[in-house]
Amino acid sequence: MSPFHFDGLVWHWPIAIYLFLAGMSAGAIFFAILLKYFCLKQHAHHSSFVIAACIIAPLTIWAGLGILVIDLTKPLDFWKILVFYNPLSVMSLGVMVLLVFQLFMFAWIAIVFAVPLSAWLSTRLPLAERLLQQLTRYEAGITGLTMILSLALGAYTGFLLSALPGYPLLNNPVLPLLFLISGLSSGAAGALLLGVLLKGQADSREVKFIHKIEIPLILTELVMLFTFFAGLVLSGGQRQVAAWNALGPGFWGWVFWGGIIGLGLSLPLAMNLFMTASAQRRFSYVAATASMSLLGVLLLRHFILYTGQMTSL
Amino acid sequence: MDKSKRLFLQGAGAILAGISLYQTRLATAREPQASKVKYALLHDETLCIGCDACTLACREANQVPADVTRLTMVRSGPFGEYPNRRYHFSRQSCQQCENAPCVTVCPTGAAYIDAQTGIVKVDDWKCVGCQYCIAACPYKVRFIHPVTRAADKCDFCADSRLQHGQQPACVSACPTKALIFGDISNQLAPITRLIKHNAVDRDKVSLGTRPKLFKIRAPSGEVIL
Image (cartoon, rainbow over all chains, first blue to last red; front, top):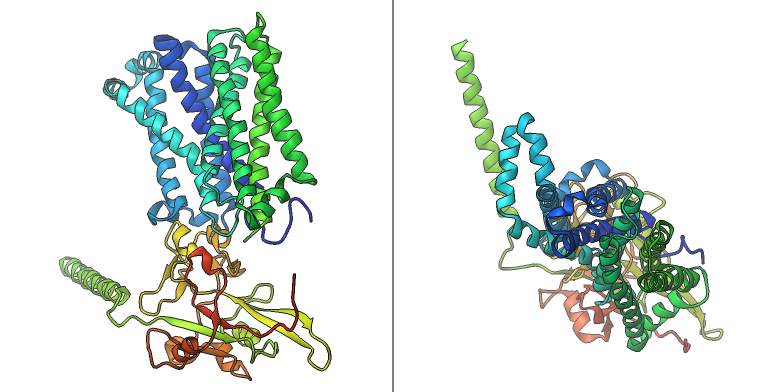
């Protein structure tokens, strides 16, 4: 059986990349909010890492949506998804979350950069500046809703797959939580990588703050993966078959043990612990750790999507 | 000048009134009625000889292109020793679930259950081709139609034959009368009596999909482990 072509395969790699990008967008905004309110306060708009997260979030969500539209059999009819809704469909609910998320994401980004933005707008577009002033009055509410929407978006990528009753591996209640956690860590990794590339200090308090959250996040992800597969094995029947098909020897087994557990989770965990213990963080360490995390999350999305469709009930 | 303007307004008004009347008529036509029909199909596997007449008739009646199909007869065997050697034939097509996963997951409502007949149908125009329904169907009977680019599957020939008062093409084509089609909400219908008086089976009932493709199993003549 070829790892990328087999009977019963409906959704291909573009969907995995879309799930990766949507999760990363949610995670980037989530960490930008944490950085602003728990670490940087009023100085957030100076930070390369906040800037990086605010660049990543819209770009990844647009790239993801673009891939999704191109992957339709009728790409030009995509507007029908925006016009017709089915409240029982996870995909339909996800479209609503995506639209509202983008709205609040831009509102929140505008608030973070309110000081430089209003200085720029005051002479050029005074009306837009007044609008921005109005927006900043609702900062608390917008921040809270953006946070909730980013968590909803991260979990949605998992619910999308877990709503398929015919695939025992995907039809798993742990999947949305697993995708949420890994999506958040990919957002953190993306912000770190682009942040240091934008000349952010590798030894800054932002990096220390993100690493402090990333360590428990990776540990939680390992626990989630264990629960995910232990649950399948203990359920018996086709669920057990699906778990062993995914984890056993073969292409996807290598991807899981070597790529996801090894490169994507264990290595970043070890390097984060090492960097926390050692005196100074270096550019190369931060960049390499973040790259490994991103690779791990990208592999996880492919692994779950493909192995999930390998075994049906 | 003035007269043509008035004529235009009158004409536009008449067209609008006509359209809105037509829309309300369509809307009332879609509403569920008290005497709800529940169409179902029974495949008597003990009578099936695996001739594939049903598959060909389906293709012709619904103009299904060659590289896809709405209906597959799955052959297994041979079982038993000569002279009791036999094959087993099982029908694979839309099960017309009452609780259909494809309808639940469809983001635009292109997959829907027709309130008049209980048939799971596809609105080609509303379908955007996200393939969520194909992934959600536990029976793996949906496909993308190469011409319409929309999801497609068996609809008991709803548009091609039922609305002209004919039975589904597969049922009419079957030489051994192994397929019985009818309304299971009607207690006197032949299909209802057959389902009541035989040990009928349905695929993957444990998923809670409530399929309406019933099967009378043939003895396989061999233990498969």
